[in-house]
Image 1 (cartoon, rainbow, N blue to C red):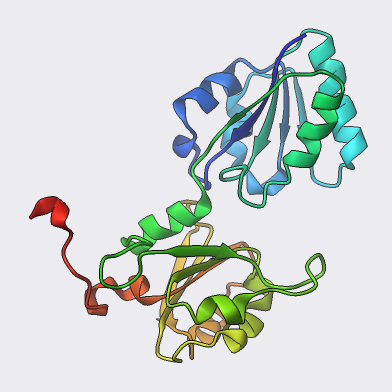
Image 2 (tube, helix red, strand yellow; image 1 turned 30 degrees about the horizontal axis):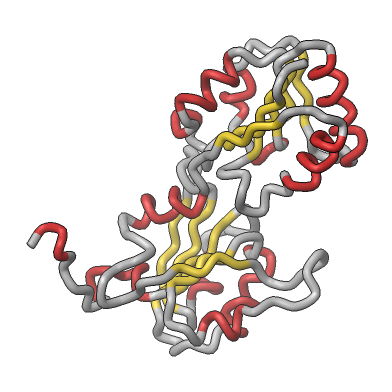
Length: 238
């Protein structure tokens, strides 16, 4: 029986998968990937004889597929977008597999939030601006209540996942000054990446005008406009 590997595919650019993740991808017998969230070039790169798009799959179906392959001695790779620890829904899969005595290993990946920071050429923690970063999501079909208002009062950098469809609601809830810098990054590191920069007051209108309706991250905080944020130089180079 082989170990099942949960691998972070990275934010989009197929070259941003880790060396270990790519090695497992190239040695997979069965590959289950997270639909359109994973670059198709990565899926094509794998010589796995069996490949399954997990979009629309129910948990029991997916777990049974992985279980049977592992028990048959096949190397199974479950490819998640970004890093699987952020909104990856891996724990419920792992719990079912481990209940059956199947070994699981998680291989981290580059999160889309880091791809977005790279696109903005900034850092989420910036001396004199923000020493903390909050990762959250807005309320919606699967979350009754969020804490965007409370988090926005802290002055920390806030990265909002799964919020593009609720962009107007997100900025309306934000209880920080309307001139606070904000950005929306669509498809960070993909060839069709779009970066829109503005303020809490105007970012929603700017993003919609750019045609962004889904698959984007919302970043709120002074680090978005590092040049004007009044940051303090790091002691690292002092």
